[in-house]
Image (cartoon, rainbow, N blue to C red):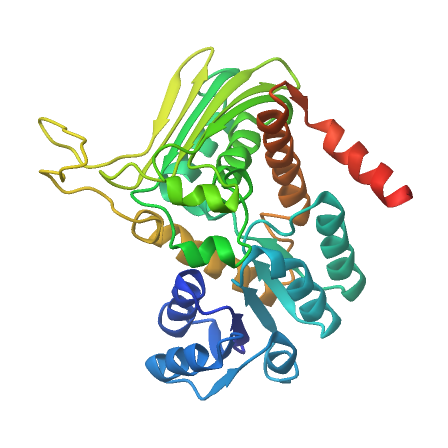
Amino acid sequence: MAKLGVGVVGVGRMGRCHAENLRALVPEAKLIAVADTDLEAARRLAADLEIEHSYASIEDLVERKDIDAVVIASPSKFHLSGVQTAAAAAKHILCEKPLALTIEGVDDAIAAARSAKVLLQVGFMRRYDPAYAEAYKRIEAGEIGTPVIFRSIGRDRQPPPLSFYKSGSGTLFLDSTIHEFDLARWLMKDEVAEVHAFGGTLACPELVQFGELDAGIVNLRFAHGAIGNVESFRQSRYGYDIHTEVVGSKATLRIGYLRQTALTVLSGEGVGHDVVDHFLVRFAEAYLNELRDFVRSVLTASPPRVTGEDARNALAIALAAARSCRDSRTALVAEETRAESMHSAS
């Protein structure tokens, strides 16, 4: 079977991760080129990975005939235009989340891929983590009975650099918590109908200048009556901490770990035991599995396991949470779609 020629757009920490995986660990793929508006950064990564081609734009990259697919890891505000450019060039697409910053934008991205007849997969990589995948299988098999309560915690050891916020990479709910929202839909096998969100900026006052939150709590009500709660925090100091719990009518699943120790002390003075310190460490296998699945889907003409519609539904929850936090009231997720439709009509 011929190898899939792939280009990576955006060479920050996420783009570098994808490029390194493609270069060394996905035998069905061949990394052809990387691109970034910072051409020198693209050239450095190309040199590090011993590939020949680097470009300053996605437009230049997709002109190559030997590139069959594009991985988009640029800042979030460029995801939609990147998808449209890749689709117009008939390239298959794996795009990091969020697919766009508005529902209308997600719909445009889906339409572009559908019109070009290219595969569009979205980077909700936690679905590819072995522990989360095993939990899904057990829920699917009915082992926990009816899912009743969803709880998930997402804490970064420290916030991204300020350049991340300047680049338009999305707010707390759209950039970070959107992973929890996707997990909620996927593991509970139901849509979120209503949210009530609270947020603050207390631990990272430097984020105030961007109007950004460093902490958020979102209560969820699912369409069929189940309930849930999600926490996001930008600066735990003790480590990268992702925990999810699904309580069912027969059993409960708990997913996640720090490290097993006799005594756990979590403080800003340092940690006396080994912990996971970064999302690229905790989900290294998930990112690799995600890329392998994307490449196989393209090569076998199979539908993606994580779709544009999944991105649309998760974004609707994130936007409703942002609106709930801003307006200090409960928000219906369906209102986001209606609001977009009214805006388009006007």
